[in-house]
Length: 174
Image (cartoon, rainbow, N blue to C red; front, side, top):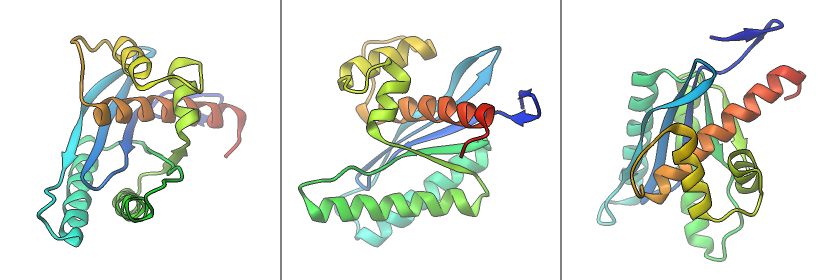
């Protein structure tokens, strides 16, 4: 892992955009001063599955990604207030399962607000999804016209986590 002045910086970041029907997940790695994507995509659960089985599937999938890629930290987006209380609660429960999977594996967790993610990726806290996706693809050297929104969000969250983790390590905060 890269070090500076006795501080440890992240080498691999797991980024997660929480959800129970579709969860965005990405792993990026620091190489030669740049972030490189190792994997990204969406974990989807079927609506026909009982909710507890959907949560169990998310736990297993996140656990498997953590086991395979061995991230040095994980970044999750904090929940924002939702008008649909039932959905907000279920996303919160899915988020709790993800936090547990990371904690079980001993992976430190950083939480970012949606505005912190936008600010870290675009320099503007009110950027739209299209701007974020374009800049994520440019920063990570991903070609193509488009990717799933949740995968792009997970990559953006990983980039924000890398920036926040590095800042905290350099400043001794957090």
